Length: 200
Image 1: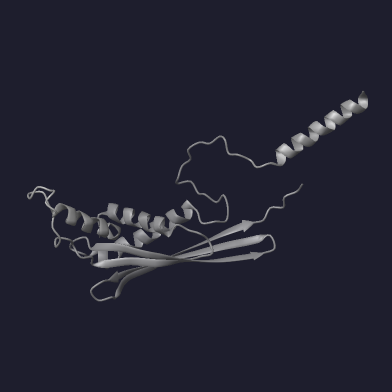
Image 2 (image 1 turned 45 degrees about the horizontal axis):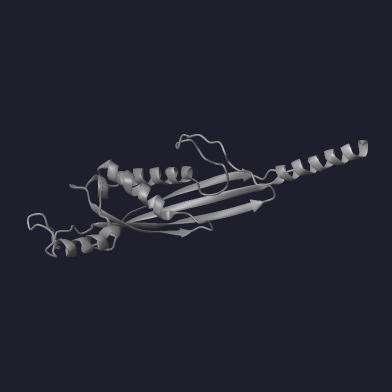
């Protein structure tokens, strides 16, 4: 009888141990302040994005090319190259830059991504399906004055239990008429981590 009870206890203990070693599910959450620093792991985070975007926007709006313009220049955003070893959504970085610059009132942006849709809409509106007084025709778009592009680089160093992750974002504002770079800036971030020893 005692042996049978002991076997049952051992089996139950083993079962509970296996259950504890299984994958964990995140079942309870709450909203967090997006401005709070996020250093949960050693990957690119929204905090990194917020830091570099603020630095770039502050630099650009203070530059004479923008601050001294009589009217807000018309700008298009092109590619931000990802030269890091991580999968980083660089479009999200450029979107945030576009939003912040637009809200500053110092820059006007043209929607490069919508050009095909706009062209299709011209065709539709001039097909006879739209009233003459409301249809739009090609030839009224505004040409861009500048292009914003750049690249994101990183260097990762790991020695023993210490690890550093370095990011550098470089942006350029290029004059379309002359191809001269009218403004360029870079923002550097370095984060330090210490490896934690995980026991059994």
